[in-house]
Structures are given as structure tokens and as C-alpha cells.
Length: 331
Picture 1 (cartoon, rainbow, N blue to C red):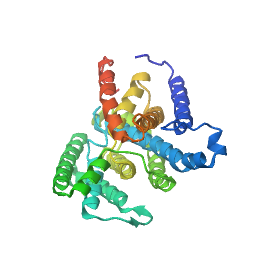
Picture 2 (picture 1 turned 60 degrees about the horizontal axis):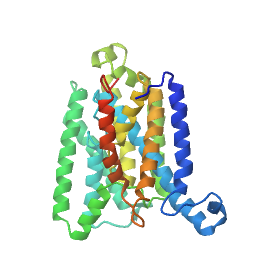
Picture 3 (picture 1 turned 30 degrees about the vertical axis):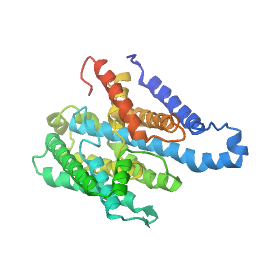
Picture 4 (picture 1 turned 120 degrees about the horizontal axis):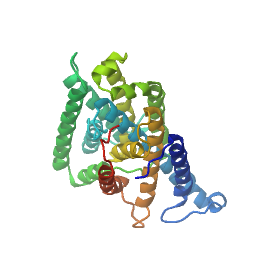
């Protein structure tokens, strides 16, 4: 794979690609909407303003947030396969949604669908369980990662049990939600997801230099003044809140949190995490926007959940990244 010597060139290229995706993808779909008709035709303007634009922005924020979350987990756990699914946040959110669907809890609360509130609550509970299992004075990256895998396994087992015992209609709803999708979103859900993500970035951006130290190992990072336990708590907590908000709105969407950070590391190796965060956010968001456009266009009038497309495309892409990397993925 071609490596860019100057990271700024890669950042500019990724920025242009992200801007192009935001402009072109809302126009694409089962029916192409020309820029002129988007302003002059009342029906097309409604579709653009109330369906496609919110969907595009949600996909950009969700993909970017998942990519940055994966980058953070890979750094603090020093594991190239760590992502929101690995530590159980997505599984906890999925369990919360499954419980609400099976219990028949509908309607809204605080202006939001109850399923979304249940999914967000499930993500928070999974984080609390991870800390309950792994919190001690001797806890480290390995114990937290192992605790996350345990929580994810427990949540997955409970989801399968609920799915097996639920009625046919509820079972279909659970499966449909677990596929992950950005259809049906609106400006309110964009705001619901955007506020936690804004707080997430406000907290982690000043802490990016600490992620550079995490990759050197616990001993060296500690000798350089990094409070390892406190930093892990902050990073895992705020990242879990961000992932919980994303999964609550979009459902679990896989592979974005793994692919985007590794692709950026391959293109701009050795870059510090502040630049890597910027590039990962744009690349992850662009990837999800494009795959969602593809998902709603290939089999009209049916729309395929974007989580299916990311899984189908994500596996081969990640294998290509593995085979094109001569040294370790996490650098």
C-alpha cells in the first residue's frame, strides 16, 4: 500500500473525500436527486431535508465515532483487535434494546424512543460490570480487556436466550435491530447522538498525548507521569458513553472501529494520536456514509441494513490490511 510521507497530505486527501461523500451521497439512492430539484421541487426537497441529510450526518458521526473509539481501545489495551464490541459496550446496548423489545415497552420517554434509552442504559451497565470484575489496585489493560470479553459473552448469551423465548414478531424486531442501520433517523436523533459525541471529543482531545504514552507500555508510561488507572477510567468511561449513544441510535455496526484506525496507520505510519484521531474520524465516517448509500441503492425498493454491508466488506478489507502489513499493525 502506498504510504504518504507527509501526514498533512493524507489528512487533506481524506478531508476532501469526506466532503465529497457528504455532498454526493445524499443525492444518490433509489432515485437520484439533482441539486436543482433539491431546491425547486417540494417533494424532493422534503426527501433531502428530512430523510437523506439527517441519515448522511448520522452515518458520518456514527462511523467517525466508532473509528475513534476503536483507536482509543486499541491504544489503551495495546491490542490491534480491540474495539467497542470487544469490551462488551455494544453487546450491553444490544441487550438493553432486546429487553425493551421483548417486554413490549413502546412509546417515548424524554422525547426519545424507549428502545434507544434501554440500549444506552445497557451500554452503561456493561461498563459498570467491567469495572466491577476488573477494578483493583493491580488491574491493568489485560484484566480490563478480559473482563470486557466476559461481559460481551454474557450479554450475547442473554440476547440469544431472549431471542429464543420471544414471540415471532418480537424476535424479528430484535434481529432487525441487531443488524445495525441508520434508516429512520431524523434531526432529533442526530442531536441525541451528537451531544454525547461532542462531549466525548471535548474530553479526549486534550488527552491524546497520553495515548501515545500508552503504546510504550505501562512501566514506561508511568515513568513519564501518566496515571494509568485514572487515564483508563476516563478513556473507557467517555468512550463507552459515546459508543452507547451511537449503538442506541444505529444499532451495532461492526468492523468500522477496527478498519478505519488501521487503514490510517498504514497510510500514515508513526503519526501521533491527535492526527490519527482526525483521520480515523473522517475515514470511518466516510466509509459508513458510502456503505449506507450502497445499502439503500442496490436492491430497490428494499433497503439493506448497513451493518450487513460493513460486515461483508469489512472482513475482506481487514484481511487485505493484514496481508499488506509487514510489521505489527499497532504502531
